[in-house]
Image 1 (cartoon, rainbow, N blue to C red):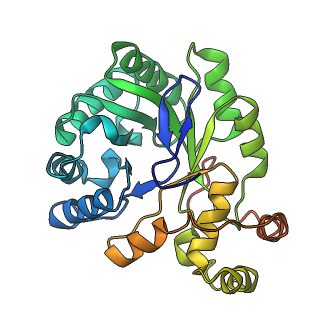
Image 2: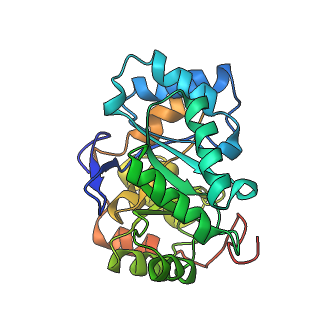
Amino acid sequence: MKDIYSTLTLHNGVELPQFGLGVYKVEEGQQVEETVKKAINLGYRLIDTAAFYENEEGVGKAIKESGVPREELFITTKVWNTEQGYEQTLAAFEKSIKKLNLEYIDLYLIHWPVKGKYLDTWRALEELYKTGKVKAIGVSNFQIHHLKDIMENSSEKPVVNQVELHPRLSQEELRAFCDEHNIKVEAWSPIARGRVLDDSVIQEIAHTHGKSAAQIILRWHLQNSIIIIPKSVHEERLKENADIFDFELNSEEMNQLNQLNVNERYGPDPDTF
């Protein structure tokens, strides 16, 4: 990645920015509107929301007021667990696109693999993709067995799997599987909600580069070809998160960070949630 505008090519040919903004727990109304506008102003082009976040309306308003052409932005939203199933998902999508006030969504994801529902939900996503209302379809919080289930029972495979991923949960087996099947991996909670920032290894590498611990972790993600959507509502932090394109971690540093994995989740386990 050269800069904040750099993209990865999904297996259907769509270009997805590798760096963006997540808006989980950003309040609907003024807070989310201002946050998204500030981020877009700083060069962010990927905005990731979800029906469950209850702030799609504010995200849509900020997009309209940003002054940046719609086609230069990449907007992701997700269908929530209680709205899964074929007909329910189609209805949920219409609610989301109306709230966002957009003509199309760039990426639509299944938020969690709801047992007995996600295959029907996926059929609805395939339908939305065929009609052009969605440019790409994917999943979130899917394990290898869920992905295999979709690939064995569907005509389209996900372009993205968005999962909890950070140095203490590096998901190497899942990443290898996704890589083999050309499914891009996206990290939610890329800095583990701040829980890994005082790790001594990360601190030492940060000191070497004159960067913050968060910047080191975000850079580690980029160099592992992971899409990241760090969340902040503070302009200084939005700037800091984006200031990761003027240095590179060497192979020894990458290896040190790769060794921090202890398979520790801070969010729900997709198999038991």
